[in-house]
Length: 216
Image (cartoon, rainbow, N blue to C red; front, side):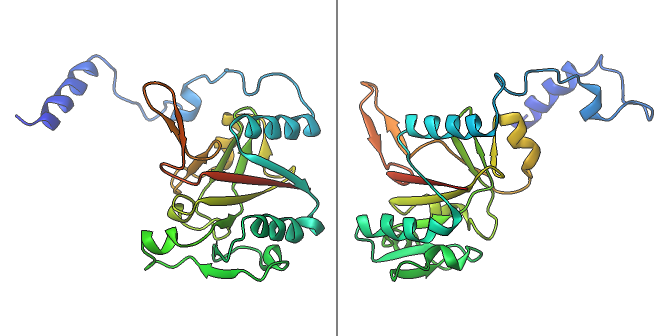
């Protein structure tokens, strides 16, 4: 007997006394009461955005705020500060975001190797949703975010969050906006890990620098 058969056998035995579903049973999402707290505390929009910025910074992300009209200049300044000569660009990224810089724009191509991606100075993306209570950005592979790997290999990630449309308070609120069938990437700060002595090392499995621009 294989491991798979043993596990499935245990599941069948555990469910042996569970009555079979009937046609008039309520659907799953209604059958289970979900009365848990959807967010912790009461905040207005401004307070929610402030909490997002605070928690992003707690995770060592660098947070910037600007208006839509200032966005291109902010991105250009961030790339110039790092002396970036190239930047990865998702296929659906708003072209006006990079209007203030003349760095080489590298498209997200299916045939790009990890070595190719590692040679690019950074990447600029949008996001699907930002969660204030956890300081988390969620990317879902939409055209303005590109495939997951373009945000995991380059050393510098600039992520643009539209405020307040893309900001929610809690994880439950974020899940309501996300499609579970999409390739979701949850980002809380730059890539980091620690050894047994708690020595923090950044950039092991993602960018060492995460810069978040909150755009009103």
